[in-house]
Amino acid sequence: MTLAQNDVPRILIADDEAPARQRLRDLLDECRERFPLTIVDEARNGREVLDVLNREKVDIVLLDIRMPEIDGMEAARHIAGMANPPAIIFTTAFDSYAIKAFEVNAIDYLLKPIRLERLLAALNKARAAAPPSREALDAAANQPRRHLSVHERGKIHLVPVAEILYLRAELKYVTVRTVEREYLVEESLTRLEEEFGEAFVRVHRNCLVARHAVAGFARNAEESESGWAVVIKGTGEKLPVSRRQHHVVKQFR
Amino acid sequence: MGNVASINQTAAGIRLPNFCNLGIMLRSLVVVNLLLAAAAVMRAPRLAAAPFEFVLLAAFTEPVLIASLFALCGARRLLHALGYPRSIAAVAAFELAVSWAAWRGVGSLFPDYAGVPFPRIGALVLFATGVTLAYFDLRARALVPAIADARIQALQARIRPHFLYNSINAVISLIRSEPRRAERALEDMADLFRVLMSENRTLAPISEEVELARQYLAIESLRLGERLRVSWRIDAMPGDALVPPLVLQPLVENAVYHGIEPSPEGGEVSIEVRRDGPQLVMTLVNPVPAGSRSPAGNRMAIANIRERLQLHFDAEASMKSEVDEGSYRVTIRMPYLTGAA
Image (cartoon, rainbow over the protein chains, first blue to last red):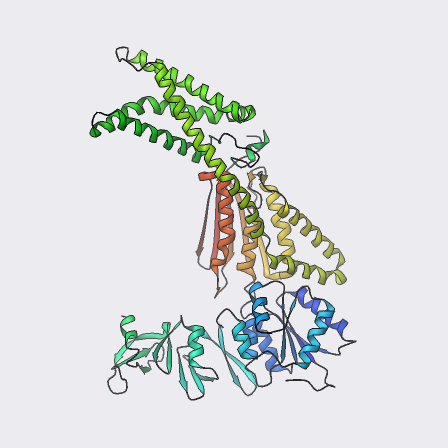
């Protein structure tokens, strides 16, 4: 999303360290003359960033990479799924991996301590260019996300990956099942398998089951090609196991 | 002689090993007994008689060997003061004297036992002494580059760039609002980096290590605020105990990096230093944040400190790390040494 020229960009500062947030505030105040702006709020971790975005209109997020719980990288990947995502400018003191990945994927970042001129340039660029794409961010990330994001009515809802029982592909979407309810996410099952492969097992062309959610296997000759169904812990659902994935049944015995 | 504190064999020159060190003692025992075993096999008329020959030889050799090791340990200051070539001559002369005394002793106990003439025993004793010292010489030469490498490696492992840049950033943010605090933070950083950049070959008092860790934590608490809580248990600490420099600060840094920073609420780092008889014990505990991704990240610093402990104390120091009930604990034990001892 690019901004109309006369809008004053609304900026969110995200960093877990108070002095770093203060420093950005000071710098942004100095930018005002040449780059009018509003500071919307401050966030101390990725979760707070998403909370603010659910509440307020934000145009640019100054996003620290290393933050507790949900880090900047993961927050950015959730943000990129929004209908009108804000621009993101990553900030980092030192992270050789991330910096290399940003260079490769043409994602903008600032090195701390941040210089006023560099910040101004980045703000101008963020105003003009499109925010980093979901694909670029996925490619730059080196760790699986801890959550999947569900985008409902402009709000981001996070589902912890650890709570997912199974993922089932249907047409355009993937159904995410937890003990409480189901969600729809816009992801591809293949990509999810690549990202979370260790924690999930494929039982069918269209279904990944969390290893911790496998209660056992039951005979199911009618619906399933292999004659087996996997029983889900917590809900008791029985999902068919395909003939190709029949080896999974033995693997769990 | 202040150099007791130095690494057993320093790069400045090869010296006699420190015979008080358990590892050196064990190695001497192994080398001499291997020679003895070889001699036993050669002397035995049949292979089956070799163990008997070995016992016979050992009855004469072991008392000489053990007495020598204790004497060499006691006389190590004197030997170091002589310099390397002269100390070798002194050791050789001493070994001859001890074995002569033993030979006389055996001779008077068993007058009818037709002993081997002393010149032959003396030659063998000199040979065994030479082989043992040559082994230690070779080992020391092999270790000298290792020590230099370890130092560079230690330096690189210690300065986490993440810490440096984040601290500079924190200080910059303080300059306008709280210049006095910014000054103090820079002073702490200067002290810290002075030690980080210096050549840390000789042992330093534990009290200095504790002060360094305190300065480091003061800088970190600038950034982390109330998330970082520290509990010191050093009432029973012998402040004069000598330890390898930078044995504590990197561990504290690890605790903050892996135990405090990944958690939104933070947590407590607890540091205990106490004396346990002949040993100095350091214990460091930090929380393991839920869903922590890399408890393995600690290994680098841990391996580095373990290596340096080994270079300084050989088998006499130990370090273990364990995870239980959501906390990570590192315990280091090393000999309690003071400059005066």
